[in-house]
Length: 517
Image (cartoon, rainbow, N blue to C red; front, side, top):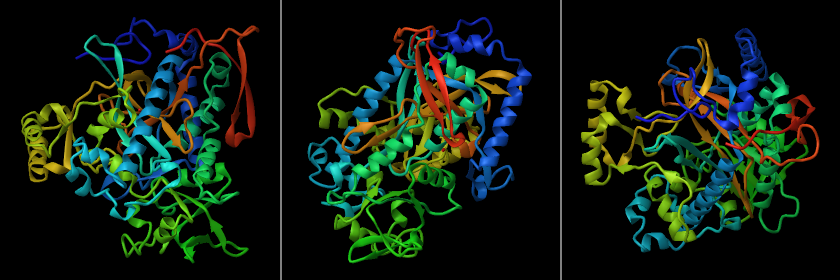
């Protein structure tokens, strides 16, 4: 099987040539003593722990007994993407998210794609993420997924050249962007000289873009919209991120008990009395948003919220019912959505997928399970899945019966040889598999910061990058186009080191240009 490494031309690393966009970084890395790198890793861990950058693990998932709060391991070696690759990926992401938003709007209105026979009606009506309460509801700009996290992997083609694929679409409450931002701050703190030597595109303005996106989604009559972040509370695995983004945007972090509905308007309780809320950036699943409509025993949402929402007096981002488009059983149809709604060929490819609800696909999956990755259509976090090549015969036989009992709950994909990236581990520098989650913001326009969250499978040979299963993260560098400006080192750029209140001037140049949570 062909393998592809982001930095080295071949594996193993010894004696391998360095890819062009990594050459400047490699020259720097060769001069770093191992003890210095280990010291920097310890420093990073200490800072992350002090700042409280953790995630929670619950119940049986807490397999090693280390407690519910964990640090996500941070790798010191960045993942570097050249300008031309990013430009192509960005176009593909805009295209894909635009088509997905068109699809969701269509599903809750005329269902033209169903009438055209492209997506089967049963895939919609029988889907747990389909919300009939949203039929005919108008949302601002017809945008349902304002914040999308698209998981991208790279795998070698038949010639061994790396090719990008979309692994899955996260459109409900995608998480992980805080780690993207904190990873960059950490790298700038530990290795400021690297940002003087490399023209790395900044990401620190993401909270500004997010706030702009949320404000642009406000009810039309609102001149100065009030935005809040709705969190399930401090025991949620992504609570750090909820608090972080609220603080970075300068808006209130609220829980369901802080909100109430009166006359179909939403208000939050403050020390100075009720204040009307116009936009809710929710980090709470649909089921828990409104006990009047969904789970009657939910205390995480606000009673009457859907009434205010349908009346157009408040906007919920991402919109209720968005999950219909990020369900894994819908994923195989996304390339056809691009063609149907946009009249274009998809720029980003899907991973080939077998849908177990189809008898022929099911027969194939049951017969070849040892070679496939089998996933729950509603699964997340790397749970509820089987990686055939890494499983025992007994595990495969057991999973086969689970799939046979409920075939419409599973899909299968080939085991891709995910690209690897050099990673600093206890034994030194070694290849580990990675993916990338760029964050796409949609309102009146679609925009994103260059890069995303790179997750890395720290266990040797593992393909599971999820933080809950031992994965870590890397800083993601997108190199800016090589423009030859006057001056010794090219263009000077300032990147602000967020929480440090410190600006580092970067005279950056580059030789040439190159997936939580």
